[in-house]
Length: 238
Image (cartoon, rainbow, N blue to C red; front, side, top):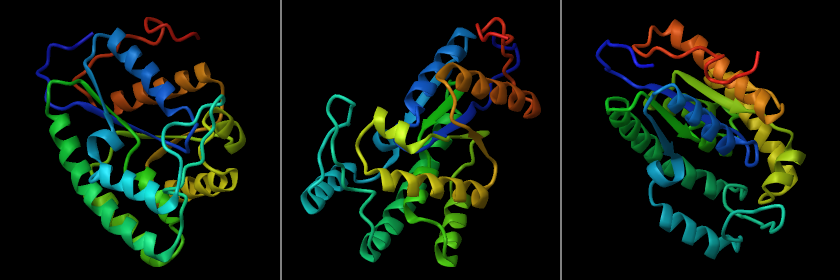
C-alpha cells in the first residue's frame, strides 16, 4: 500500500553473486512481492542497461578467446572465456572499461531513482565487475575504493553466496576453479566495500524470506515514504 506522502526517491537494492547463485530467481520473486504490495518496480540489468560497448566486448571476447556464446544450462553446458581470462593486459583493459561502466551506472541509477518507480532493483552491480580484478594488492584496492565513491550505493546490496559446485550444476558456463576464486573475491570485496548483506546458501524460499526481512528492516530505518504491507500479507510463512 502506498502512503499519501509525496513520492520523492525510489528504494534501491542490488543483487550480486557468482553465476548460478540464483540472482535472477530472487529478483523475480522480490519484484513479484513488491508489486503485490502495490509498488512500482524497475529492474536494471547491468549488462543490457549499463555496460559500455557490450557488442564490441562480446565480439572481441569470442574472437580472441574462442569462448562459447549463449547461456549454459544443465542440458547444454557451454565453456565461456571472458571474465575468467586473466592477464596483465586484460587487467588494464578492465580497469578502463569498469571505470566507464561506473560512470554509466551512476547516470542510469540516478535517473531511475527520481522516476515514477517505488523501487529500483539492479541485476548485478559494480561489485560484479570489481571481483574480476581479484582485489588483493594495494593498487586494486585503491581502484575499488575509487569506483565505490563514484557509483551510488544501494540501500541494500545483496550478495547471494552459493556453493560453486551447485551453482555450476545450475549454470554450467565457467570452470569450477574459477567459480571458487570468484566466490572468494566476492567475500574479500564484501569486507573491503562494506555495507553488503550476505545471504548464505539456502533453499530458494528461505532465501526469499531472508531477503524480504532485511528489506523491510532497512525500509523502516531509512524512513522511506513507502508503506509496506506486512509479511503475512505478502504470503511469507512465519
